Length: 318
Image 1 (tube, rainbow, N blue to C red):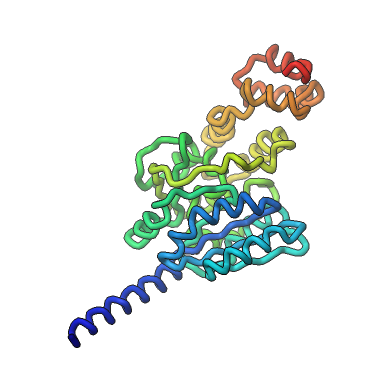
Image 2: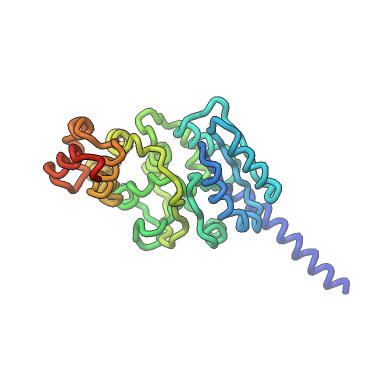
């Protein structure tokens, strides 16, 4: 009987130490702005897995109202390991994202966009992975996005060529504390809307410690509306090109150019369906065509005549 009690006690003690170790090993951070219900969907996806390991979750809220705070207060009744902070005044998209990364004191930080839905087994799989391996940047797949073998890649130019466009999605990367420490040494002035991309590829230019997980780990909530929709041209032409061009010189120009065009080609963000939708919303018009005429010929597969016709096509017919 005594032996049985001792075994149970030691097993419980082991589980406690394991839980504490996991809490130190990885944290989840979520920058958010004005999407309380969508954020709730994201949290609902991960709470059961987080409970199992008591993983800390940090919410950095840039909202101008208290709707998100009220939802988090309800969730904290079920899961106390949530740290919430409302930023007054708001930090803005880029600053809030980088601020979020620095909140935990764990070995790894999983930065999740507030509209990212994590698959059921992804958290436990990632915990098992980081307990047996150490890579400073771990990139994970989303549904129907990309397909390369799961493995470590040790050439930063190859990583930029294969994964650069994909790294723009907030939520697909886990960062070690070594990566986050570099953030204070980087000038983010020339990477508006893409600070996480800049951080990843500045770090890889110094220390190419990278692993790609091809298994589908997450997906985007289809209820969300991207914050950049009304500024799609300035975001995915001007800002995106600036972010890539201003990467360290160790990345050659060919790979930079390929990374820039890859996003447009892979996502078809300036394809026929997308441009028709933008025309219908009044975001794409003749004035916008003239402003981005040269760039669109680079970013779009459509011929110039089609680009012009869409720009002047009556919105009511679309």
